[in-house]
Length: 115
Image (cartoon, rainbow, N blue to C red; front, side):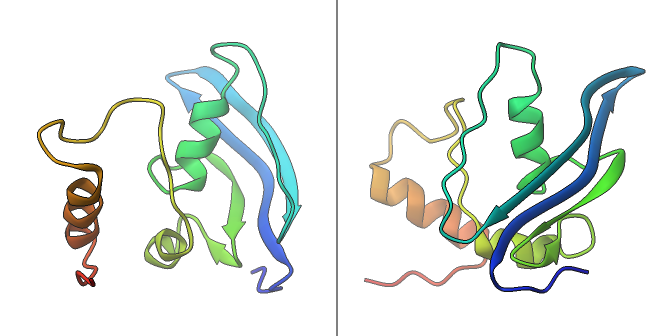
């Protein structure tokens, strides 16, 4: 378990397969708090899959990853408290304002509405 507060993100051999196709192949990352990192690559390179695993939306097939010291598989609730994720795909309700969307999804995650 990685509980060092200076480490924001650490992956060790993070791997994901779809059927028998390897889409993320033993990725190792180490990001300290305050660092800015960019994932670059062509379509189909695995960028979205990596982000989905790190945000607990997708379970890795192999390896481990920690966000702020929390295991992305065993401590999903704690990981989700530490992160925000704005995917490329539209996931908002168009009839709601931006603030209403944020409040709605916050409430769905058990957050209290604050003015």
